[in-house]
Image (cartoon, rainbow, N blue to C red; front, side):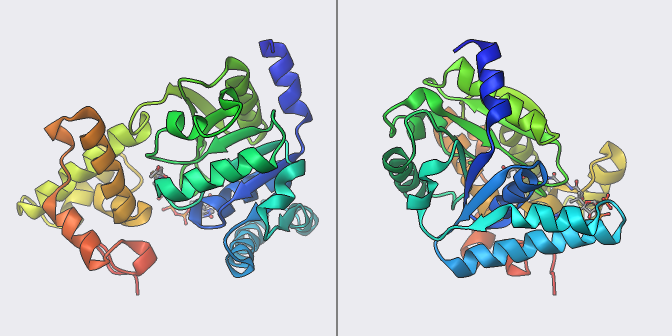
Length: 293
Ligand code: CAA
């Protein structure tokens, strides 16, 4: 498929599937629905899916209150999100992105099911932040249609999409995802499949270094965050960001970087590891470096 054909294929896509209705998945479903796509949203139970849809509704309502969206557009976007309890209903999807748990066994299972259910040419993307796309692509019969489509939290706000090219990914798959990203109003960047891609390879060691500095008593957590906010113009300090992303996710990424590159510079701070063991995962558990009553 030529680059032009890939772009024309992408322009015609209307039926999208999103697997996972959690923090990333519901945001991904929202931006596709706002972009005019018809979205089937799947998760392990209808309760999870409906909770994701309620979050989309709350986000859209906030935009209506701020005068950034009309009530009619909100209703239209919501009507484009269809809760779908069974993955079997994904057989009519032209494009699927998964945002399930960052566990390799769970993702493997999803890709094997998609291979069985979806058409041979359905483009399959993963929103993973740490699992090799090359490994996921190897699980399906037509691996050149698999790539990473890495969104950032909060999805409706963050402009970047990292498109991750596995060893098997075809150029036309990359072109299709690039064109879809532009249709969502995002800015795509293509990176080769390597641990942490670019985003997490850079940001997680920065967060880790801030945790080491905190552990060593160099400064208070508030001061470490202030240095990076006021000195470097980051919207959040690294410890606030760790809480926002989830300490378990940061640790998973660091462990992958450490394992893959075998370089001690990626060694996770003992404090980070202990906080994860304690269940202090950040905002989602109401306690991380800060408390969220
Ligand atoms: N969902 C939707 N919209 C949201 C939102 C959410 N969860 N949180 C904030 N917003 C919107 C607000 O409605 C507001 O919109 P308007 O400008 O239209 O009014 C806008 O974002 C700014 O929000 P606030 O004024 O409430 O707060 P803020 O100015 O402090 O911004 C923030 C909040 C956008 C989250 C900002 O702090 C920020 O950019 N933080 C850094 C986020 C970041 O680095 N994300 C990447 C994490 S790494 C990752 O996701 C990848 C990975 O693999 C781990």
